[in-house]
Length: 107
Length: 114
Image: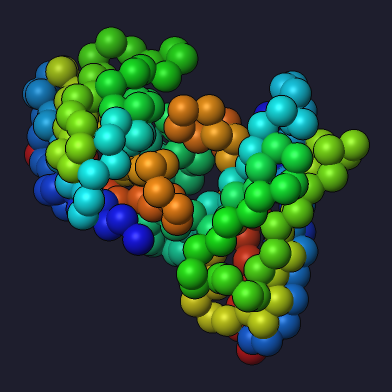
């Protein structure tokens, strides 16, 4: 099973700040990595798929990069609605797996 | 849109069948996943079924106890859950894969407790 390790566990920032979230895979997942945002009480929302492709309707302030084992989600300038939990997920191998999440909260 | 149903409270060792009904897209053309989230915890992938039902995958934590199936005439995917344990307590959601999981249901809650 591929283990995805996200860091940091919590990121304390202010609106307007740049957020950089990391996801490291225990073995290569090529570019088959996605990022999700989950707000309290809501279903996850797909942000990025295949490492760097923004999903439909996702603002340009969200960007993804990386390949192999190291991936990054960047939010260029945080807006109040961006304070949430973010998960990475790989679809390279079965079982598909999620990271444990990074919480972005108010500083 | 995806709408789940069938959750509830069940005793350890019991069974439940969850349903996920799709609308607004061509269901028969897509594989489908079940994902769960225990209270206060992260996301855990549970099971997948190919668009025609021919291929299925399961997480090790549910293998041999859960079974995924689908009825394309009813636009519905099912999760039969047997031998339920306390650690199966979670909100269960279905999701459509397209690159990532681009459509999610709101989930149905399952509580395993005596």
